[in-house]
Length: 301
Image (cartoon, rainbow, N blue to C red; front, side, top):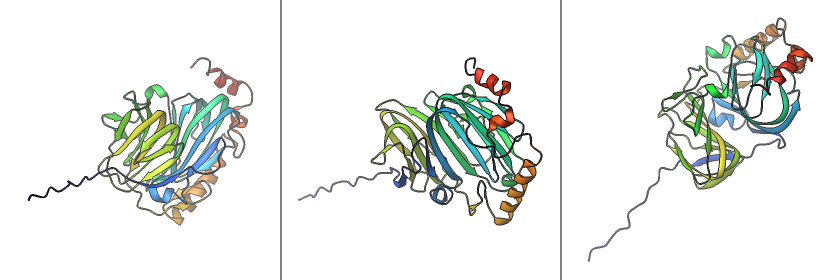
């Protein structure tokens, strides 16, 4: 008598290795830091999700070195200024890319209304970690999109980010309607990947993910997601950073030597820049006409 064997069913679904709701709560939730989840997914080493209502002075003008900061505004606007001399108004959907390199200072002021988005730190490799600072402020209209996916950094299919960055990194903002399915296929060389939900709920790897961050097992397998309601999230992948994370208060470098050089660069820039360190940005731009004119830009974008 012939025996029929039940065929084995295999799956290539990429499993979740770690998930976190972060800490801090309230309007700003810290989902990742260099000393915890950042070690798992470096070069991505820091991630904040923010969702609150202005106006706010945005905190003091502060420094960085050895990293790039990437702020994406999903809602709201931001008045920005940095020690490269750039200042202006960034609208909803825009991106601030600040490659700190050997040292930079920057700050922001938040006009009235809701502001929601993510700030990400990317750890730089030599020689970029000590290169001169470089900033890019990209309006929503200049961010490549296929209508569902916006390319914040790197590339996706034929779409290329407006931010120039030579390292193998992809960072996307994705919006899905209720019940919509989407698959992310990382570049074959990328071995770390994560996503973080801002609004709504995603079903991924058999779990429901709601306003939290998940890290996937290392590898380059696809990541399948299904929207449970309308969803707004970010997803990223990269070649894993091969260097240790040597951290200062506002800096991440590949060695103690480079950290010392970066922090020295921060001090040198503070002595010659037009921004006032450790004061709200408005104190540097002027409490009067210059800030009011930028806020007026909200009514005439």
